[in-house]
Length: 108
Figure 1: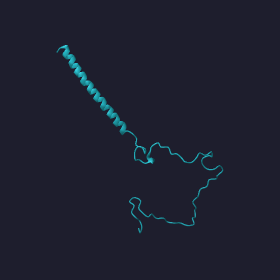
Figure 2: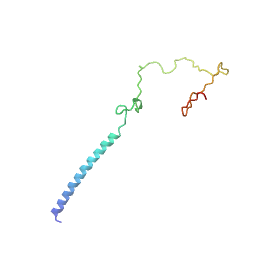
Figure 3: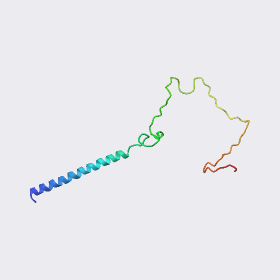
Figure 4: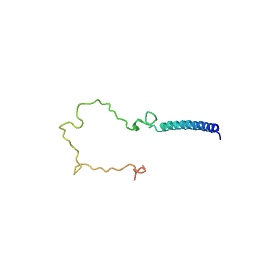
């Protein structure tokens, strides 16, 4: 094989490798586009999901800010309703349906 033949063979191989390289770059860019398209997070803005399912959404109050402190008013005595040892009336309450399967319990 002469030097000219060897140069021609190397040029042909170089052209073939450049073509394969360009094709590989095109495939890589297609894959990147597919990954970006498929990895976008679905929100209520880009899909039919309800607004309540958006992650990280801040709940914004419509109430204006107040200069008053949060919670119970100062000086308020807290009270709770205590159970009586001798109640006036005792009622028995029965369920209308069975919790597990939902069958009616009327007449049972």
